[in-house]
Amino acid sequence: MNPTNFQAVDPAYADRVRASFYGQPFMGLIGAQITALAPGQCDIRLPFKPELTQQIGYFHAGIIGTIADNAGGYAALSLTPAGMEVLTVEYKINLLAPGTGEALIARGRVLKAGRTLIVCRSDVFNIKNGAETLAAAATLTLLPIAHPNLNGAPQNAEGGR
Image 1 (cartoon, helix red, strand yellow):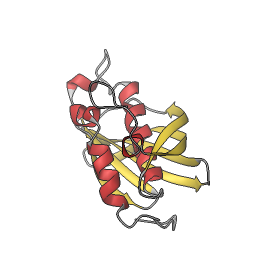
Image 2 (cartoon, helix red, strand yellow; image 1 turned 120 degrees about the horizontal axis):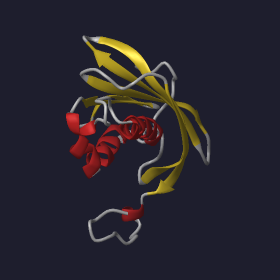
Image 3 (spheres, one colour; image 1 turned 180 degrees about the vertical axis):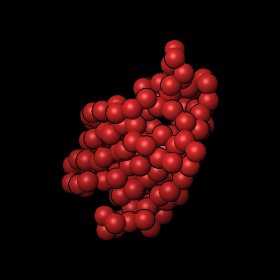
């Protein structure tokens, strides 16, 4: 699954990525799951739920953007050293088709891992009857930062940053 030939600098990257992802209450709320993970790559699957749709029954564009952002972000995080997180600095998404089907799958891939910024691409596909069709394409720029909770940063009342 690693055609980009990126190498993880943290041998425990997969555990760290999964802990960060599943530590987001929002991902649990919407039902998203990591389905594939390798250095520089992350796939996220989101099953259809009526609560995730807009007024005419398609997946809401905000949900499509959310999983595109997370797939790219966790692809980026897989290449950072232990004790790091990433923050999205910017992303652009093109919605190419309505979000339909039994599920969406977002495939995040690192394009360039620089010293200061990591640039990724996320493609989001509709899954319908086992077939995939491209629904959205996003490019993301992410900033690696020291994990705030590992450095004594205060948390808000809900435990987040």
